[in-house]
Image (cartoon, rainbow, N blue to C red; front, side):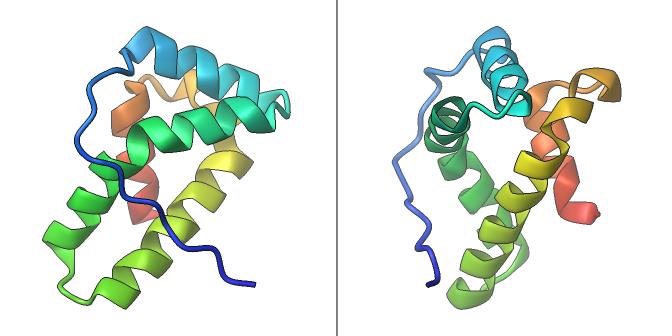
Length: 94
């Protein structure tokens, strides 16, 4: 079953430190932490993807794929030297 991407409005409630903690917890397998990370960042990721592609269906697929990569590579975020947001958006190029 294909999962639909939720698109909350702009949110700045996630601080870099808070997002880092969520990613660390996700790296340990905490699904709830990852879902909170997703909810906090998906608006930014979706807007970025829409800037790069006008096809809404392709953007949906891209965003889902990006979060799949984020889940699988969460443990490497701290070693990346990037902020969580930069790391997340950078996964788009992989």
